[in-house]
Length: 229
Image 1 (cartoon, one colour):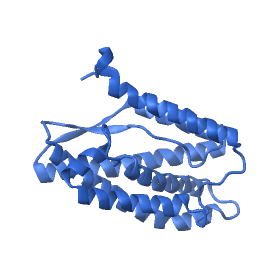
Image 2: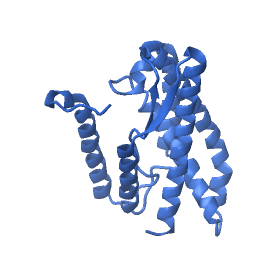
Image 3: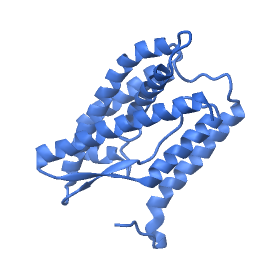
C-alpha cells in the first residue's frame, strides 16, 4: 500500500475503462448501424472482483505489468443474433481495439521517456502505467480473446470470415512477439525483484486457476448448475 501500488491500480483502471469503451462501444454501434440490433452494456461484478484480486497478487509478487484477465463487461442484445452477425461485430471491435492499441503505443513513447526522467510527476506515472497496461491489454485481448476456441470470440469471428480473423489475429501475434517478447526492445520480461520460485508459482497457480475457470463453464451443466438470467 504505497505510491507505486496506487499508480499501478489507477493506470490499470484507466486502461480497463479504455478497453471496455473502445471494444464494446464499437461493437454496440456497429451492430446497430449494420444490422439494426439494439444492445446494452452489462458489467460482470465477479470479473471486476477477479481483476482487483489479480492486481493485488501482481503487486505483492512484483510482477509488472500486472497480471489481469477476465470477462469484465459484455453486451446484452435486444433480440436473437445470428452467429455470422455476432462474428462480424466482434471482428469490427477487435480491429478497432488493435488500431487504438497501436496508436496508444506511439502516444506512450514520450510519456514513458518523461516517466523515466528525474522526479516525474504523479500524473505522468499514472499515464505511463495506463498506456503500458492499455498496450499490453489490447494485444492480449487480440491474441487470446481471438483464439478459435469454444467460449472465446475467435471462434465466432473465424466462422464468419477466416481471412479477416487471420489478418487481425496474426497482426496481434506479430506485435506481441516484437514488442513484448523481443529482448532487443527491453521493455518487458525483465525483473530484479521476483525470484524464479515466485515466477513459477504464479505461472502454475494462474494456470490451475485458468483451467478451473474454464472447467466451471464447460462442465457446469453436468452438475445441474445453471447461469442466472
